[in-house]
Length: 165
Image (cartoon, rainbow, N blue to C red; front, side):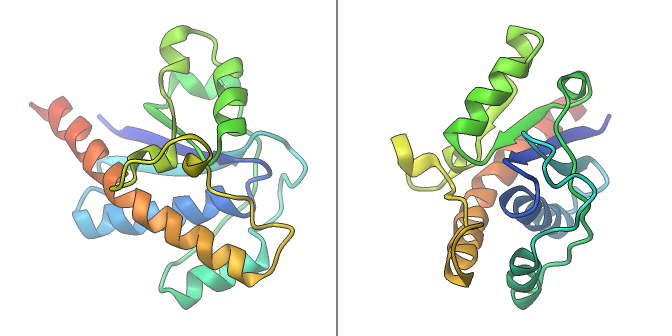
C-alpha cells in the first residue's frame, strides 16, 4: 500500500515544490520511491497552473535536484488519500487543520521543521517565505528543507516499514 505525503505552502511555487523535489530525491536514494508518493500544493489558488518560481528552479538545479512542477491548490477532499500533510509554516498548519474534515485528518498535518535533527520551537519551526526577497532566501529555504527532510525520511520509513510488518 502506497504511503502518500503532500507538502503545502502558500501559493505552491516556492517552498512546497522545493520540499517535494528534495524529498522525492531522498526517497529515491533510500529506495522508497516505489512505496511513497510525494506531491505539493498551496493553501491558495493564486498560481494554479503555473510552474515553480524561477528562483526555486534555479536553486534546486544548482544543487542537483530535478523539478517538473505545476502549481495547484490543496483541497479538503485530499485528506482521504493522504497519510501525511506537511505544512511549511505555522500559518499553513493552522489553515490546513481548519480545512480537515475530521480530527483524524487534522492529526495528519505536521510542520516540516518539526522533523529537524536539532529540536526547534515557535517561529523557528517556520520555513520563511522567500518569494519577496532575493536568491539568498531561496538558498536558506533549501538548507532548511534539506535538514528537516532527513528526519522526515526516517519517520516515513518507520511508517512504511510498520505497514509492511
